[in-house]
Amino acid sequence: MDLLPYDTDIPCFPRKTTDASCDGLICLYNTYAWNIVVNPTTRWHREFPLSTFQRLDRYEHQVGSVSWAKLGFGKDKINGTYKPVWLYNSAELGGLNDDDEDYDDISIICQGNNNTSTFCQVFDFTTKAWRFVVPASPYRILPYQDPVYVDGSLHWLTTNVLSFDLHTETFQVVSKAPFLHHHDYSSRELIMCNLDDRLCVSEKMWPNQVIWSLDSDHKTWKEIYSIDLNITSSLFGSNGFALRPLAVFDKDKLLFCEPEYGDQLLTHDPKTKSYEFDYRFFSPTTALPLCYFQSLISIL
Image 1 (tube, rainbow, N blue to C red):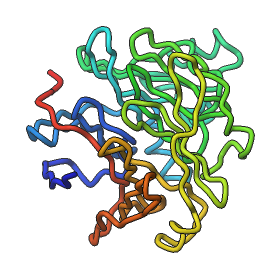
Image 2: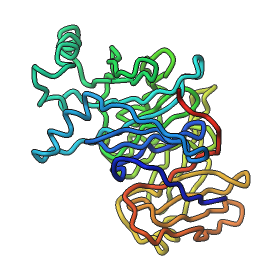
Image 3: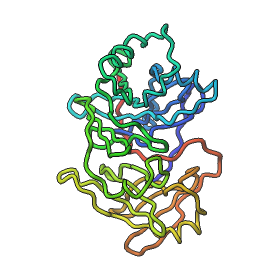
């Protein structure tokens, strides 16, 4: 396992990143200022414009409002195109002015659906423009939950496990989940992630943290890891967040990080039931670590 430095000229340090990479590409963004896709292997990068949500959120941020929406990034497996996606609650567009370039589109969407809970925007790298997807999700997005890309779809953990097919650009509920009824719906004790191209959810239920994996064929969930929180809390300390799984390596060893700041990496071996510190970032960070594989891919 290697930790490689990457430097590129970007407008300012990213406030947030997406929770996973796709085909060796990583999407970075500052909610109020810019978006960029980078390939750390080739040093290629490409910027793309702000969405309606970002333009509005920049204004709302100035008056003290905070948003929980995060940018998703993934690949349409049929056409081979890459798509950044914003899914955000309709209430977050309350400050949109009638002179905004997207005001008419949003008004039409709302007139056609009185129960609009969310808005969804997809960026097209060919036309260099954002477009609205209708209908969007019927379920509101929740705090602390990142969109996760797996096998041609982006997923959100809401009151259900929600999937957005990047080819058809449609939403659907994946399956019933055994963990949702244990927690309030804005819980920090649940983290969705991609492990070995499988959709997984990490659930903190003291004294253990269980990681569930979705069987995409049978639409069922099975437990694949159980982490002893008595041990990890003695290493990381204890807080309200679930530990954040990052990757599986050497067939079944689990790499995860301290959940709040991401400055410490820990390895868990389920066979020996051991825990070892793998790496610690000594410089201050404003983003959580993520894993990717090297590629030569770029977006023209």
